[in-house]
Image (cartoon, rainbow, N blue to C red; front, top):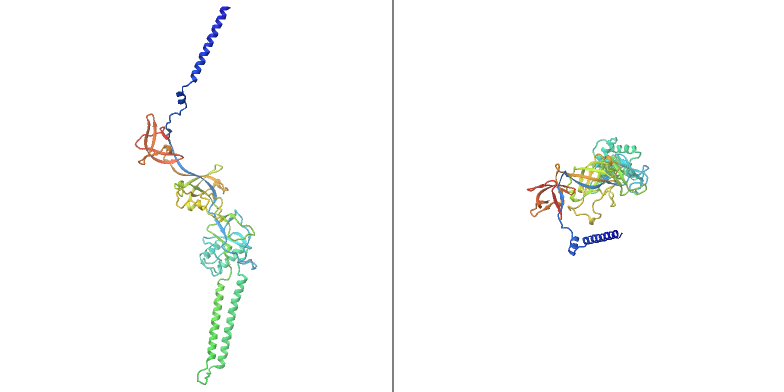
Length: 481
């Protein structure tokens, strides 16, 4: 028993020794000298940051956000007053112009249509590039009259010769056109009728005076001729004859003047198209995009905005990108829903600048502004960094139909590599003092410079070709340190 107990004591003693030794070993591994501790906290030695050279195809694009709009927004206003009502009352030209039937936003306007009504009179749409600027009626002539005559003929109302002179044939065609729309063409006003009557009365009075004188002269000539009286001095007494002669010449002159005044007035008397009753559009049909008046409002100033019926995309790109673009480039258009269609760059810069058709500082329908917010912030003319407006025509709107005002993604391809080429990040390109481009290649032997020519760049990558050195796919070029 005592022997067994000794063996147990010996085993316990050995176990304690082992435990103490293990503890000392563990403690030793956790204890460092001050030098070791400092070294453990220092950052590793810096080395170059490298990126592998890739062989791939490059496609360079300009990407921007655009908006879908109707083409050619233009302000709509009347050139003058409408005429009098069919009753010929007091609400004639010069009276306050009130909208009695407002235009309807979104309406498609064709040639000959009634845009709106003012003071009960129609405002009619016609096709022509000469704007309406005056009343057209008898006695007027010019290119505006000629385009009115052509429009009447297109509508089926024959004006006679397309001469540019407003005659009876034009007046008759105007009368038929108005009647076809349910209105009476503008007839002479009461004041004009009164003036015509006065001129006709002047002619009648002048004729009566002349007849009186010529009748008196005829009677006097029968009684007195051929006797000649002489006074005591022997002079011929011809005073009566001289007076009658003067009276006759005066009466004849008065009649001629009265006839001339009547004839001149009659050339301008008749059926007219008042300045406010027709609007000429360079192209029809047009779409009434916005309407700024309602029934009862004054018809002066801008009454709305019209656009073409075709869709375009308006966008703005940075000046650096604008330099890469030109008319005719193909554009990929992607809607918010991911649908795609294609368009073509149709205008750049000032030619593509959005129209300020709204008049009160607002911008035309659906346009996006990439310019400055105020005149003080506007970029100077010729500034290469100035944003460049861009207009894109869309021959086949497809998924864009019915989305006027919506935003989309605009992608314009400006170039593509000839197949797969060696590419490196733009950050890898360095220009040496001699103006040549180089890249630094990291190899086992260290970093070496390789001269390259630079080609197409896209998405942060650039095409490179080695000049007098080796560069291949899989090499690593330095982009930073």
